[in-house]
Length: 347
Image 1 (cartoon, helix red, strand yellow):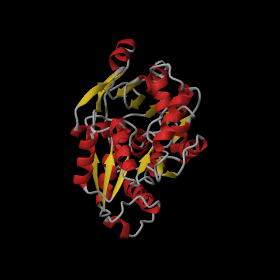
Image 2 (spheres, one colour):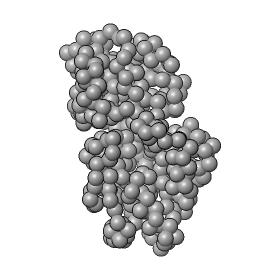
Image 3 (cartoon, one colour):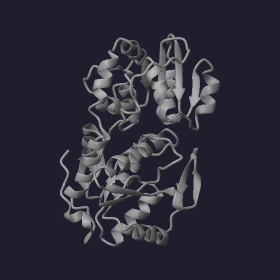
Image 4 (cartoon, helix red, strand yellow):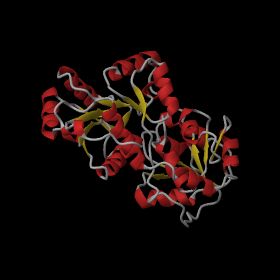
């Protein structure tokens, strides 16, 4: 079975959407499913206003049609609501082809953090974008409920995973004053990093990631350690060496970094909002508090082994099985394609 995934987020971007799609493709390969990607790499791009590290594609309908037809997919999934997502949606609508979509990003909150646009207008546009989708895939039950309450139809659950072969406890010393409070992610206004960096905490605050706010935050918080982007074993070492993972974002739909931290034996401190609340729930692996400083101190008392055991339940194989099964269950296999005869997976 061949699934074409259209995405405006792709390498060299470092974010949860790119990591999710990359890990999904790896896991799907073991299930005899091939994911191919339609990405900005096939088009001319321009820098996104207010976030120049992100390049937006300028796709043309004829080029989109050519690339899709060359890929000969059994199914089409639209992962993002950007220019590529819009053009692929248009292609499918014009030809009356079924497709599925996923909801990764709370754009209303992201946009409002930058420009004064009413959230209701953005939600209306998102609802219209996803309306023809056979299945709108959401990462958590709470997000799925919220989308349904906002008028989205055909919402299904698609859980995420974590690579426990990479992220696991290990003996690493960063040679920094302890305890080490760590935050990992894009350094951008919507991540609310000031809520972490303003805290009066002992030890050391470490930020891993890059983004448009990094320069101003480094200048404003000279006592914090900014390590820039880290990947693979380097990132895994940093997780394992820290004492608490601090997640100040109030806009994330899931937060893969939460699972990476927990798999590394790192307890979480966060606000009690939908992203961390959906991942952690009532499990004794994190401290959720409207007072983030209190959460940080409470997290220091949490068992690291409990964190590891909790994260072990989230695998990319299960995530891939649910993704594929959802496509088949809603009849989103293209007419006459081989995937229509394949049995459904059961997660």
